[in-house]
Image (tube, rainbow, N blue to C red; front, side, top):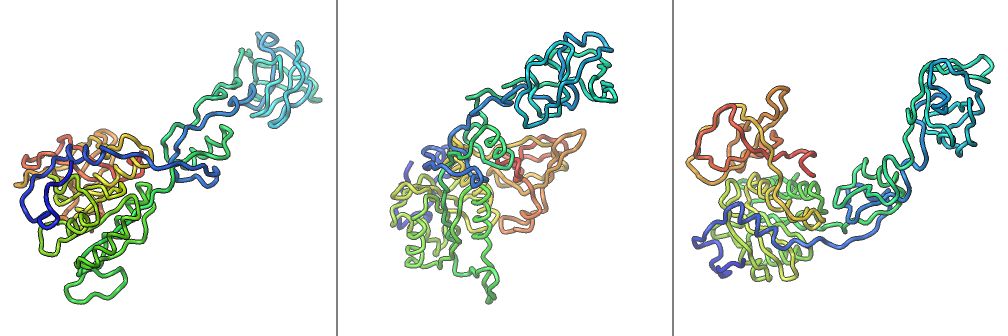
Length: 424
């Protein structure tokens, strides 16, 4: 789907808005994962696994004791009171002992290989060793297989240890190591560029003159990109001048993912869409029926770059990043098909007044788990799309597909969780 507007009139004439479903479909239409590379396991944390990891050996690689005690033949211990001769010690790391003969036992530690011939481990607590340690009385019945993990019971050689794609964190690194991997195939790092636009913007830490504001979108979006799995360049600020925009947006197109923030609406200085078109970007859409975030745009650059034009109000930019940018970043890293963020069902904590605006609405919210009711959601006190402080208090976005209808306490609602659990 390509824009029919010309660069001179883009965004300045009325044009139709896509539905959320249509916009998601347009973004997901052509997301092909980036290339793969092999990295050492120690360097793989946080990367996205591109190929499955398979077990190089059985796990465990031998019949393994899971209790401290005595390895015995169950046929010798079919009734309490059997007295067996003790013929050695099997410790973790030892090679398997010799075949265990009739009426004999081997003292064994957790993790040690079970001696051939033995088919049960009797816990120390259920035995009475002799003073000299040469015999042991078994005070219980020994059943075949008790306290033993058989060879290959967890994984057989060739079984999948880790499926792809998955983000490699501490547990996954350990599982890959347990499977015998020292290197893994991961997707190449995904680079992204962020350009914020506006004559009024001042970098963080710089003094502001009357009429100026501190630039917050760049740091916020760079943090989101990192969370989604991309590696953003340092955000840059462009003035609302064609030459400055063309230079900085052109440099940004060196990256496969480009975010331009601000300059996307219908003001006289909203020049970003036209400049991008002059640089070879072809838009899939400009404008989606949602609130906040209506002016959002998405297109493809001359070399296939994924280009987003995000609204300048920070909550609008944040919402659009969660709804659309996340899809592309995850899709490029192999989380295919590229999909919108998952929605979870919660119970509304209190009533919500109806809105006059019919556009689907995303509201900063707090969610928590109640022992009886499950997940509870409550909208934050929010003053609109420039209110970063409400956003900072939120851990979710509450989705209202038909906001013109009032909602009551106890009603079911959908939420998008902005927690680590939501990154799967």
